[in-house]
Amino acid sequence: MESSIDWCEANYAFSPYIAEFWNSISSIAMILLGEIRFYKIESKQFRFVFHLITAVGIGSFLFHATLNRYTQAMDEVPMVWAAIALFFIMLETRFGPMPKVAVGFTLYAIFATIMVVAPASQYQFYVFHGTFGSLEVISIIMIWTIYRAKKTKIPGLETLFKRGISIYALAVACWLVDLHFCSWLSSLPVNPQLHAFWHIFASIGLLHLFSIVYVDRLEKDGSSPYVSYRYTCIPVVNYKTD
Image 1: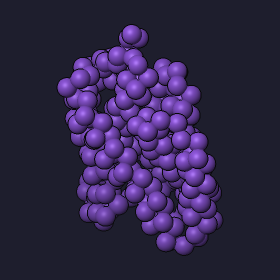
Image 2 (image 1 turned 90 degrees about the vertical axis):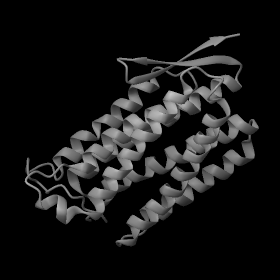
Image 3 (image 1 turned 120 degrees about the vertical axis):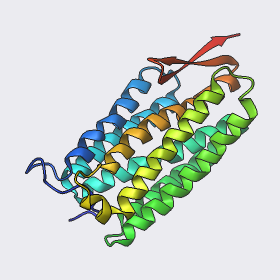
């Protein structure tokens, strides 16, 4: 069964076995993000989120390699789950343990999975992005509120947010241009492969924004977090226990 969307990259241009070569290869950025951060974080909740990010990267690689409806679900479902899990972490950090809400979010994740997987027409694309996009916007707003409340208290938080939101906005711009201006992009001497850059920039931007959520949780748990950078561009969250 074919996927509900075919991105702007020419199919099977580099290999008879990989439909969208650059979109597939760039998905490795998400796998690296998930695995590198998984081993640097002790919290089980955050480790679960980064495992989901790894699953997104694997699913994205398979989806772009095959443009198959089933591998498309392997890409999209973990994206929805990761967004739900991150949203719940932010709520729990702010309001404390919420077991009943956790059950509700689990049921919503099941419902969202059905909504994303079930439609077999072009409407599937809009159902998925309506579901994921709403979670994405709400989560970014909540991250912004964390930044506004704590930017003067936590060293490095302001730079972390400004870098993260700028890079993620660039990623979204790449995604939108690739989606809506494919005819123009294809007429250029070289297709800039903006969807592949979406994968890369989104991974870098999310690394920054997710780090803000982690900083918020560390402070809530009584630690004194601060942000440093490795190789001037990779954010690292450190903390001191009181």
